[in-house]
Length: 374
Image (tube, rainbow, N blue to C red):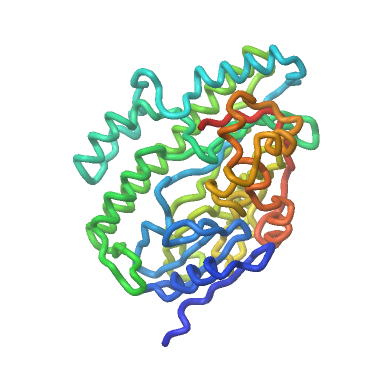
């Protein structure tokens, strides 16, 4: 039996048996050249979150995931932001709830002409774009998606948003999985040099653009709220972002490799990135170190240690409020946010130490206000 492709690890703790078995199975799939495992790795379907996969020719939609283009964006404010009064904090949360819906806008928003003029590969996807794509553009999403106001070690304030391509990415993934061939170990793939493969890549690129525009609209809307309430001004020139669910062709190895990242960010030498902690814990702005064995990647966050269902059983509302002490959030929905408590995630400081050869920390940020949907 073949030993499979090399699987290299940057982990903060021993991997569980199920994760190890999933990574082993992936390494034995067709055309896999290498697998890199990030410190936030955890189980999720066929391909673990926190996994980077390199192939020569084949594309694996499951190694990108459904929320194609999901990622982070950040922007700094000039001026002091004071939220020490309950009234002011409430105004910010209420304003975010109005301008940054969780699921959809009440009415269709203006389309982005650049996106809407680009081709999608199927009539079904085009109809979805014109229906759900419009009402979800500029919305946050549920689960671990969030919008935070943060303060760095120099006392400067930043917005950070975590969101992606919403329903569009999932439908694109599902559409192309239905067109895949099935290879060794049961993984579905598309050949990159075929029409089906090229259509998938084109649709992925569209979803990346949608996710980028989605985050930009959220940042603009959130900045408007904070500027109105506090008088501080956002500085758009400081904005930057990164994707953590995508596939790209790189020739950094001297030949072409398709790098699939599912819950991992690109960390080429000098490349900026954003690595969030969890609700109530620090986040980090980083620069990549260009580690080739790690497939020029790093973690995308802290990574779960507890499934959502387990967290809902084991973590109480009181425990969430203790763990998120000092962070402003909507206490009325605390009972629905227990699966996002810090205890449900790995220790971000251990994650950052485990990948110190992959990224360099530029700044550390503490959360002040967290806006999440349920």
